[in-house]
Image (cartoon, rainbow, N blue to C red):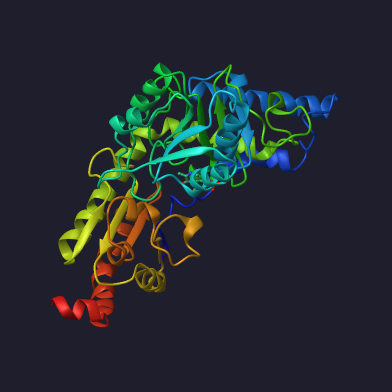
Length: 388
Ligand code: PLP
């Protein structure tokens, strides 16, 4: 049985060329980049080349790149760091109810420390409304943090417009762009952002490495204190192999945007259409347009998503009910609740996220395997019994 992996929003497989680029730094090029002698200096230079390459891919400068350990750290650093460094100016932060937990939990933490957080609602397709952002701004607002694309329902948020409002009001703008590298070009000036988070394992890079873009002049307190690494913004010996791998992965991902998006979005549309038209009582979550090209989030009424996942797994198909970080709770997804689904509908949703390795045969197989699974589960469902 061929396994079909449709959970690429949770993580992706490391690209062979990325692994090849990293390998020397786990073997002979083991020097600490902060040491002054040859084997350290050499690694330092190569690390700086990777930084330069990454900066150029976002239209940023080298000094604006801070390497971190993951997307969650980047989000924590951005929000806690701005909150602490700018507390004399104000204590108000604006975010949305559909952010990743790495943003939401950070904001909740800050609430306990006396900060005021506005969690903006979203519309039925998951969009934050620009007008709502405008209305929420107060003189104490120091930061707006709105994600570039939603990891569960795929909505691409109007960050450039929101960033422009932030700029006009002298407020820092952060965006969580973790799901967007390799999907759409990211230009920090066009997006009007001061801070931007990414994570390598979402675009065929290694786990354990991420980045925070930090616009020159941004007032921020480091999350991790210690040595002088990362321009004194993030102490700790750099994850050299990870950073080299991330630079390579990013280069490949960004060069392949058009070709991959074209292929992946066609397969995604085929998958959505194939499931919605073949199975009754199904619906699409998130928008049709302005949606991540690899995201299909479908609701199957009258049954539990968890049961669908178990049955899919028996067929070698891997998907999810939402964010990987919440898969250990039985609570419905906060994003699906935020777009207005009642609990019973939110519980029956499955997120399938494709990759550049997904094939047409994979999608045909998934479309074929779904209906008998849904039929079997509905046959046991007392809720379905009432409607059929
Ligand atoms: N932000 C978004 C939108 C994500 O999808 C994820 C991971 O699922 C994260 C942040 C966290 O990234 P990491 O797993 O690198 O901590």
